[in-house]
Length: 275
Image (tube, rainbow, N blue to C red; front, top):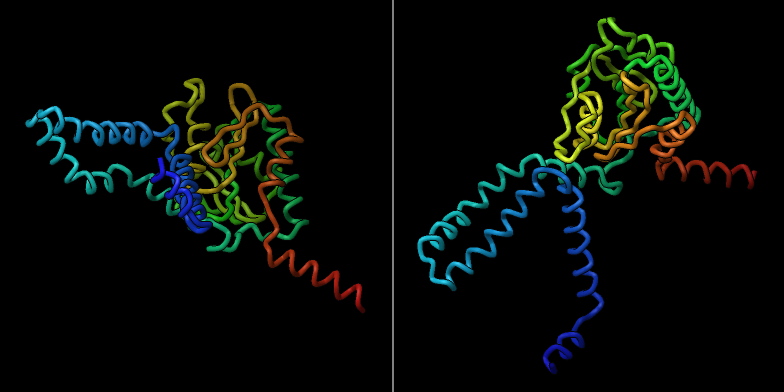
């Protein structure tokens, strides 16, 4: 008991900070693999970690030899098995605000125009029950997705978006990628989600929309061809049955002013005040 008391007495502020950082990192790693195939693999690895010393205690020599050698080559196997999750983790680190500046540096008027045009296009497509898949790029570049489609590089407008998704037209079967205030490409192919817990009723369009948000920080607007329901996919999560006003608010809130833009704004206000 005295030893435990001494341990707590020797804990300093930096020890608490150290433990808090480790706990935060493990929590973030868990959120990256939650509800993916990696979650089941982690459970299997934990079973092996427990079974290996237990087999030695119980003197199960053959089983212990197999488990011990399995754990020896386990690190190499982990690099192969968890390659997608490791890539997502590194991309997440690369998207943190202190390592990268936001690509969403559109002027506020242009952001509002983007919100209005995409929102009204989705509303029109929803009323007509025309399927749509609109990817709005943010910090993570999507050039590899853009290259799978047909380049457009035109200003975002509801008329252009609606026209792209009209059935039986060359570009309707695929995704539109928007960068800043421009439609970069249409008819693009997206990776399907790895989420095995997804509702079986959701089709390829929703699975593709979720898939790209698992590999990037993009925001995806999805219109169902069967029901006309509007959904948003972001950070690997799907929000369904949105009305137009909620859709516009979600798109608007996904764009944040850069610190430099905020600084310029307050600097401008200060100059005006002192002129």
